[in-house]
Every structure is written in structure tokens, then in C-alpha cells.
Amino acid sequence: MNDSSRAITGPQWRAPEVFAAAERPAVLWSWLTHTGSLTARLRERCAEFNVCVLRVAEIALDDDEAAWIGAARAVVREVFLRCGETPWIYARTLAVDDDPAARLRSLGEMPLGAWAFAQSGTGRDGLEIACVHAPDALYQRVAAAEAAAKPSALWCRRSVLNAGGESLYICECFFEDGTPWR
Image 1 (cartoon, one colour):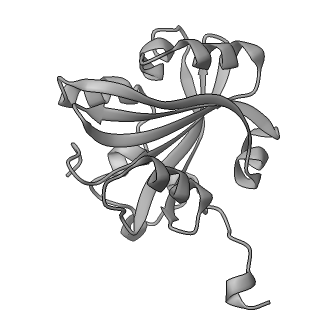
Image 2 (cartoon, rainbow, N blue to C red; image 1 turned 30 degrees about the vertical axis):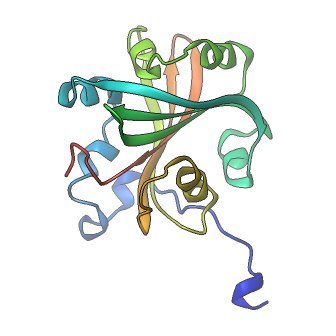
């Protein structure tokens, strides 16, 4: 099999502690490993913080996501977390069960973190980090949604957010231009 016929592989997701210090993106690392409310942290840095909903729909998952959450289909909510009109983060949340799926459908432009971290016992499990590149399906999703110049790679994290008895699978990709970590 030659290189051009090889199947596209997904991101190489790894636990934060597996990354050597030299591999870590210095300016982003504290954001990628933050386990609290990303919404609250972004609001501290931007008075004009807002959510731009890209879509909410039931979809078939790609192989990487299906393996991660153990389901072939899910309700997806894709958003930009922005300061004013500048996207800082692309977030993709997946819900398999009825209650979390209904939650995603009903949020509108409310940040998921505002609801989740208002629930008692909210926690994040299974945090993984990857640097995604142009061939990856996740990179292609972000590139299709963002009209700005495309970086050669994006740092992303994914985790399971457990809030209010619901499990939500969240992937967040961090942009570099015009962001609080630059």
C-alpha cells in the first residue's frame, strides 16, 4: 500500500501526564489541562464572551469518536467559544443518552459550562490531549467551520463531563490568533 492510498488516521490522543515537557505547548498547557469551568476562565478574560452555535443535530460518528464513546450515533452540538467576533475555541459535544441529548438541544447560545458547573458534583474524567493536523477528520471539521487562516496544527483536548447525572463527551480545539493564551 503506498502513502496516497493509506487510510487517514485520527489524532493520537494521550493523557496529559504522558507528554514530555518538551512536547507541551507552553502557552496552552494550563488551558489544555484545566479541569474546571472553561467558560468561567474565558469570561475572566473577555467581557464580550459568547457562544456561536454552528449546529445541533443527530449524526453518525466517525470511527475515532465511535470508539471513544462506544456508540455509532450521537447528538452533536458544535460551537465557537468567542470573544466578541473572534473564535477562541471550537467545541464539539456529543450525547448518547436521551437526557443529555435533550440538554444539548435546549441550550441555545448558553455555554454548556455555565449549566454544567452550576450542578453539584460536576467533574471531568478521561482528559486526553492531541495535536491534530490537516488530514485528521477533527482538523477538517474545525477548518470547515472557521473561515480564518488555517494553522498547520491545532491543539485539542477531549474529556467526559459528568454533570447533573449526565455524561457529555466534549472535544475542544484551541485557536492561536487573538486569544488569551498569546
